[in-house]
Length: 508
Image (cartoon, rainbow, N blue to C red; front, side):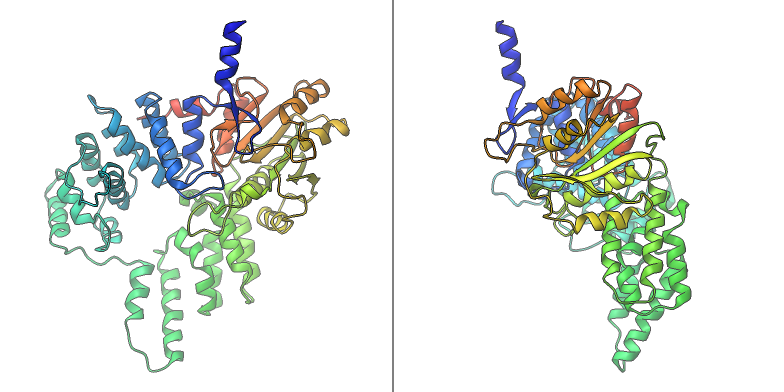
């Protein structure tokens, strides 16, 4: 059986804890690495190691897949930096058609992403030890950015026109040489060249200008900032993300009850939630920030955030009364790395939050956490953010290992038949007990004798490139990412598709 041994050797792998695992296909590995990355360090992989691995994987899959993944990651998963890295790496290995330029045009959705893409290009194309200014650009990236330039107006350009960037808006204009679509746009391009863009009305520019003023007393300064925050709220020009980021600042500025009421109405408005396309953990971050503030307004704001996150979950199909679901969140030590350099949110939190989002859409459901042990935690489904915070405060109660097999062993011991078993994890599962010979793969095989129709869904939150079970089997499915759109992938799987097929359907 020579070929059997060859295939097994090819598929076999070890995870970062030394336990048996299966290598993913290059397409699946690239997908999981991209949608779980903010180019920050993770527990088992530094940011530069992740970047280099993504670059290698780009060269192993088809250019069309890379282009579609970049567009998918930006438009469906709402990621910003990592799709730009994909485009830069794609431009290195592919030419001869307009695939890269089309992907650039569909991926660059904000004016600042023009400069971000050019800075990424400079970084990834600099020679060893070189810090030279970017002066040469891929023709396809240039063409795509040229069309992107035609999309934005003066306000959008001015909002992101900053002199201290390594590549400024003016630099970008000279590098890309976009063709103006009409006389008014040529006049706009001339303003960029001459640094004559009108200062935009944003919370940053307004507060910055106010901060330069002189005041007679601390009281008059505080009163001016209070009035400015109220003006920003009432102007309708304070974006949804900016509103969430500044909840603490507004409360501490002592804005009026009417302004707070307006804030809560904006936060909890279903249309505003849908339009904002926030990643779910943004709501959790805002919730945590505001719950520490001493104010009579805190409860109203927390309630508005709960309403908002429920609206964000409203499109999750979930499962009806007759479907039995188990939700298990990995709370091991390796999950406790922030998702970005400046964030207090960890992979740990994202797993908890995604599980609570899904729980809100299920009827027959068991949920809990696993580390050294597995623990069922019964909670009502209504308060998603509150439940997530409660689970987070249970840190350490089940230990810090990743004994995922204990979730399945609990099901076996209790002879509990589930239709769906869903684990939110970094997939670095092993057996930390004395002897260490248990594995989720064998536990799942035993469980299938009790529940032959059960499916196991692995929600990969770290993208290290291995799976504890073979993914080709129909009863084991892998989904990756931090966005609530992971549940769209789950729904596709229920209909016979998978994550890669959704990516391949993306229009470029």
